[in-house]
Image (cartoon, rainbow, N blue to C red; front, top):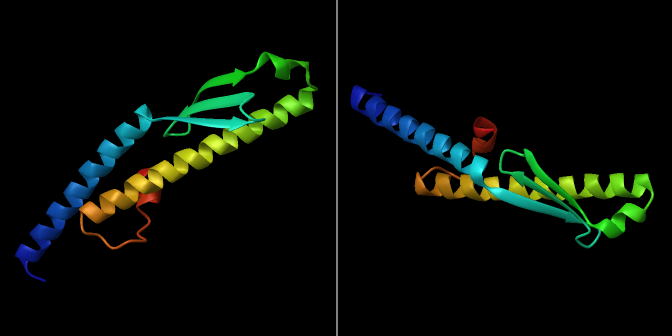
Length: 111
């Protein structure tokens, strides 16, 4: 490997690092909504999996505590799944734009 090849490789690594930093910033602004109980419980979180808002329909408050707790957990899990899927889609698009092969563990390097 010559210096020209190393220089090109370094430029690619720097471009990848910059794109990943931009994606992390975008993730902080992304809003994902998870639901359970046919929409009676909603959780809003950002792409970094930080919960921003919990909404519980007033009708749900007449239920037993354990039912409400289960619905909150289910809504959180729904939001996490949606956030993870959105992140993977963005990572796949970034990898494609950079000409990288699919299947690289870029998500583990990001978050």
